[in-house]
Length: 113
Length: 117
Image (cartoon, rainbow over all chains, first blue to last red; front, side, top):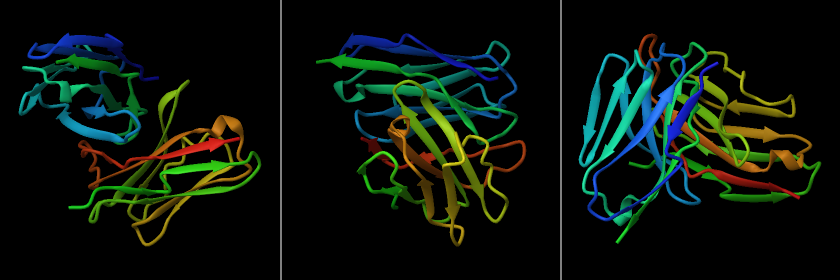
């Protein structure tokens, strides 16, 4: 059974700092890995999707990497801003499917002005 | 364009009542998913629809849960005889078709917060 772990569970940083969020998964036979953010009381916003054949994806100040063989992904956020404060979730399709997402518990990020 | 929409945004119901939750996917997305987010369990997959294929219902927690998708678009998740443990946020997502060996980003709606009293 696929298990997804995110470390740290919570992170508080001053504005402007670069930071890294970690995600690990137990079954490396994945089709892709997706990073989301969730604001309090809201749904999920897709940030980046990395296909299994890719090593990284970039969108603005965000960069996500994927190392399938070691079962790890990182989300790098450059020059953090208070508006980046949210819970960040990673998810991978599991159960042999390319659609049934298994999520980590998330990292609660607070960026202080 | 418009994203995934869900209604109602909040629903409070008494234990034992039936509830229906609605999801409108992004236009043109053939795949639709339901997930549940609860404090104890985190985010869990419930059911997946892809075009006219038989849905993958493997995540439904009990036979009190059912879902349908009419005309390949709107979906309704029905919970019969609600229990307090059904209290959670129910999230719907859609994507373009997930081809074998590849898959597409899932886009989520704002969710329906269900409270069973």
